[in-house]
Image (tube, rainbow, N blue to C red):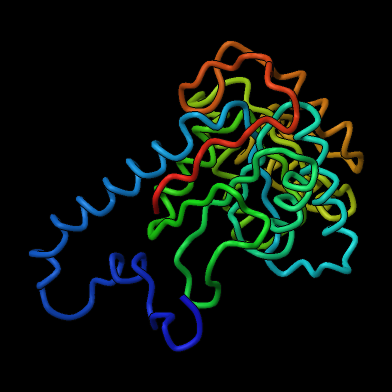
Length: 255
């Protein structure tokens, strides 16, 4: 949807709005069915994608910014290593990773979200699913990925990053590498975690070490490959990639 067709509020916002009458008591049971349908659609679309890595980053990254070029390199390098690339399907760094994957002949997945200021998937997505609810979408990012590569980004990127760290820390997922690309960008955050947060006793230093930070794309991909382990995602078995880059993507699931 674009222009005047974009609704003034999102499905998430309507779900979380507790103001007004108690009519929501009579509509929430039907929302459960809609939520269920999002999980079914996501599972059906992504079940046969094969080994994949989720790449996150800012939607505000411009094509002439070095981070955009970094995103293209990451997408292409992951495909060469035998992975599909999953992003949020939006513009900026997400578009760059999708572009790199598609131009390298790999599978380029976009998981879109209903937002009042973004509409539609970027043109480099060849397997796309649109979601109304963040929590359904975020499940897909983890369930069907063998790891995360995180480019510089804002609140949405930080949300996805720290959720992944929490899942690893609490052993909800195992052997799930998380790589931050951009030492200058992420250095201040890591320093704060290692000093202020650790000194206050709110963070364990070994949990900070779950994060790998680098400026080198090949090193980032190598960290993902090195973490090949019996279990990945929320329950998928991790197997070394067997299909060569350029394999035929699975058909797009109806949205």
